Image (tube, rainbow, N blue to C red):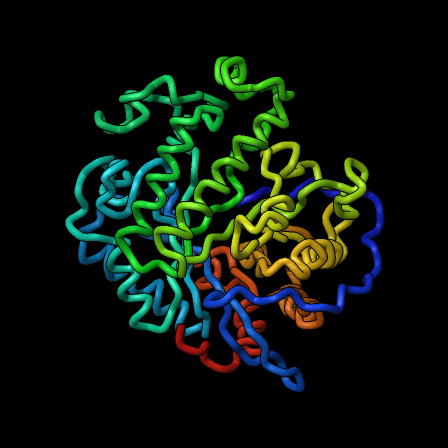
Length: 414
């Protein structure tokens, strides 16, 4: 998930008028849920992100017995039900590996501690079955290009595609990545993630904010050879954005044929571009812009209809000078308006009560204020919460407070 941009000395902008016309809801994605007292019910996503990379949410550590892994998984699903949520976004391809018996990539090291070792059960298959039994949607969350959070190729499973094809790999800032500029890499990623869709009746296929890696001061992503071969006269930034476009549009096209009822969505970094960079951008001063730094033109994907929903990570508080939550909700609402792409807002439950955060995040009402604001924005069709551990811990009671106010009634069956 994305880092918060640095603060700015300028004051946060005042509330602006939100576009009145609601975007058309994508069929099958949205569920009806009651709002706070006095508000009419409307379609609403109530999602929960559950990360597996570094054993963040599940499983709690690698190498647990299969039955304990399974129990932790069902406990996670029960957590969603208990909090009257209706969808879980489960990370099942965290690092060019798999939480299912993939024909393309090895079993994940976060399951057994040894990449490629069979964990004794089918985690994704079980997750789909158990989620549906509880009336939950199950979205398979995949990271497209990360190979490893370390930099040793020989630490990967012997049959790992990155070891078999070392020319696909870029070592960058202590981590290994697939090179998005190579057509064979994009084909591999598309085939790998769609293998999960082919095997299971998933409700959604989900990418987060990581396409090209986040900038690291003093480091450059070395894709010179691929750029020389495939650049086609574009400047490097435009070429990288085209590579990301080809990945996203390719998944969209194949998914529509393979399993049309499965939604495809992305949860990008919350700032596309600052207005100072581009008149079409948001009135923000973020240090990272997804268009320029991650080479992800999410605004284009909405306009092209390559995604069914977008869930920008708006992990900032109302009034934050560099990236005001309210300003960004307004901006994203205008991007999806009239497109048929559903807008869900990514919420930073993990920041609430964190002593390392500022005063705004020590107020249990901050998240509830987000929901009150979004209740007046017809384009917002729900929220996705990061992360499961934070929801369970519920520091300062911020999540339970908003759940009591906005999730009073059980979520309808999927």
